[in-house]
Length: 137
Image 1 (spheres, rainbow, N blue to C red):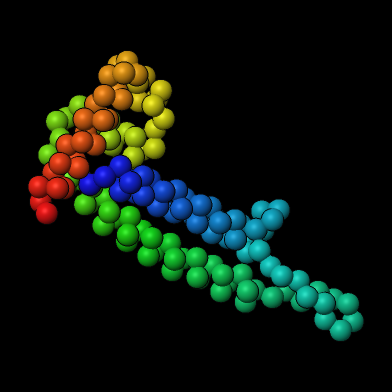
Image 2: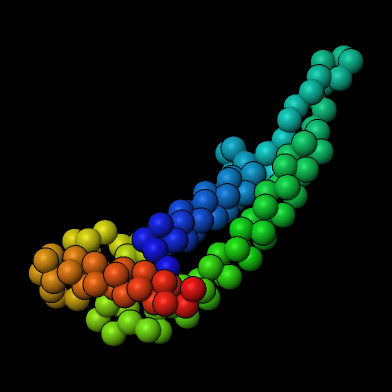
């Protein structure tokens, strides 16, 4: 387990949030109406509502979101298994940083610890995780 793996998890979680927001925007649409629609002019000048494109896009987003959720769940389990080998204080710092996405100053405040203490715990955790991964292979 490396810092890159943990950052990848955080990045995947952000992608999921962005997809969820995009999907929500499609459901609600501009002005609070349900479903964003594409207006096309009929003969005679009256607009025709075409839901096929937005619905197809929504379905594709839902499928993509489902796949990313599956990857996120599997990655979370893999990380949790690795975190079991860490002391409690290091495990808490890693969870706050990568699962909750907290900034360093928020972790400090939440744990009532100095910046140096938090970053040392983080560094020790990453080193232990790397050593654990190397020992398994």
